[in-house]
Image (cartoon, rainbow, N blue to C red; front, side, top):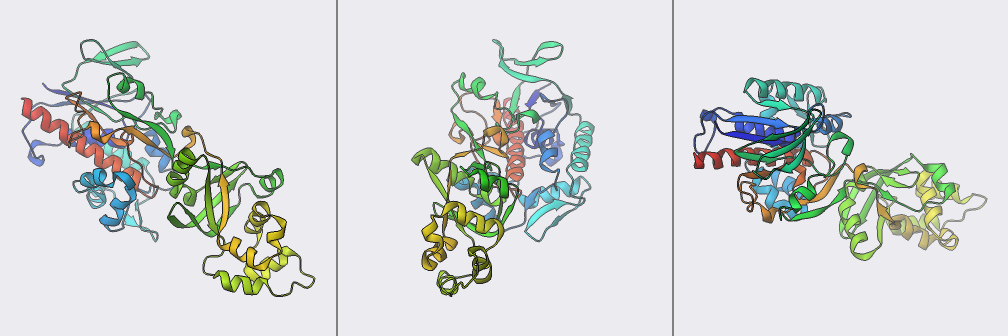
Length: 413
């Protein structure tokens, strides 16, 4: 009886199990009889990061056109795009419907399951997988391979070795180690000669050298609405001031170019337009009007609509002479450079970049130098913004790896 061991019980690993456990009638490719599927996870339960990601509302995917959707994957859009052609946002929504859970598109285009929670979806999914004969093993931390090729696991009862005819590794990236994604697999593959790009924080906050006064006054404040740009990337939204930096959706969307600029140039700036909808010329004209007895704060509020944290940013980042020159102040309101010093540590990031290089994989996500070993999920070298893109690619890679393993086993039988 052929056996497949799936290491990692997040969305990618569970989707691989789903694909392997599906009935022969619904599958393409060679027939595989009597296939045994087992999922191993280091944590006490499955899908922990999946559940945490859905704590504030389970954003499962996005409803924008597929061409725009694929473009969210940057340098890896060709690699991820071919996987989304097989199992993309629409197929994912249909699959969720098959679990008895409807989905809807929010006003932002983001797609959510009815009820907005991840737990009902995960419960229904695990129940169906158990009914399909998938075996689950928790508290099994992968330790690499034994001399005879068996998988080595550290368990509370000591080391356990598991022989498998095919292996799917879906071990996650390096963020949120407390939920299981700790990147401990990197040296295990590197010592086998598998090319692994260093893991880097993605969708992360950044350190900023605020003065003590600004930090104490504005930590926790949202900056909105605002347009931010860096290295040709431009987004509108909002972000939050932290005691030591910045975080939030708009920062996460631009985290990759900020991080890469820091790595290559040693410095990076996030350029802020604090007055979307106003032109620099109109701001300059209004700010040039006599202040009379108004303070600078009152003048900014009355003439430019700049108050609170936005006014604080101008005071924090501009020299005093710029604050009193209407033309220069108007230019700064439309293009305020905010220097960032470093990304926040990888374990604080929502996701990671880096991982197993796609060039090391064949079209079915099998490692070229380790036949029968497939990789899926965030441990591959790709990144995407939040908004459903991360989860969708994890599902798509798991789907591809599961189908690939089944096809590979069928050809060998």
